[in-house]
Length: 125
Ligand code: HEM
Image (tube, rainbow, N blue to C red):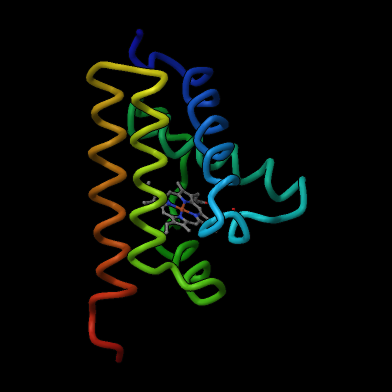
């Protein structure tokens, strides 16, 4: 098994991940959207990881806001974060191994913990 080496690898990873997410009853509805929006989302998600791994500058930020909006609309509960992360970890492990594969797992956990703390653990203001 190889490491994540380029954008094509990331596209394969993100696609495989969402195949699993779509089958998860706790998450599937959240990601239902028109096809053109969905395709844009896939590009942004791949840009995001490409920017972390290969410093391409292809992601222009705003993920906090994106998730705050998703939280308001759907409720991003701790349980949902746990499911999301477990799909991400298992999809990465199924397809890749190495430094970059480890990085994307650690980074998603870090971000997931920050988002979850913001939405579910802080006292509401
Ligand atoms: C409960 C768990 C999560 C749910 C339900 C969720 C849901 C969503 C939704 C609904 C969007 C917006 C899709 C769109 O309209 O384009 C999104 C975007 C995104 N999510 Fe999550 N998310 C979760 C956790 C995470 C975590 C832990 C990461 C960590 C890396 C992450 C990374 C991203 C990225 C990179 C985008 C694209 C942001 C952008 O458009 O700029 N998500 N997510």
